[in-house]
Amino acid sequence: MEYKIATLEDLDLLTSSRIEVLRAANKLDSSVDMSEVEASSREYYKRALADGTHTAILVMDGDSFVGAGGMSYYEVMPTYHNPSGKKAYVMNMYTNPNYRRQGIALKTLDMLVKDAKKRGITQISLEATDMGRPLYEKYGFTDMGAEMELVDAD
Image (cartoon, rainbow, N blue to C red):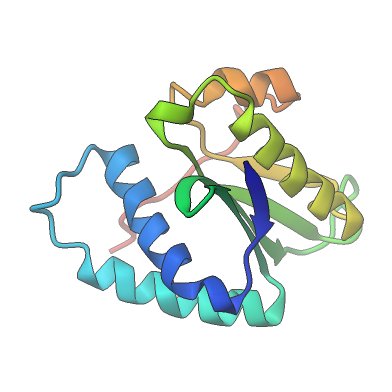
């Protein structure tokens, strides 16, 4: 397996793999139109890879895409527990079903966490699927019972 930190040269593969990840995570078949998300994802990657607010890892077996992971970086107001205000969010974790249980997701996650730590970031969060939760707990992530979300703020 090759674990590659993506660059703008990987824009096509990043975008198509993002759609593959979203289809798998949301159980969407190929009949669901993802063109808007695809275009937005392409623009996101262009901007975020260029300005350093996202790290993407592509896992390849030869020419075949087998896995991915991403880390988005952002800043909030400094707090007592996080004086820098810098935070990171794990996204787009995926391993092709034929390659699961081989440590690919764990290695990808570890690479992303190490990248965040090199940037001085001490607060990393994520949204876990039922399938991914054991991996994240094994790595040391804990439940954030106090966090809330407003989804449709009309």
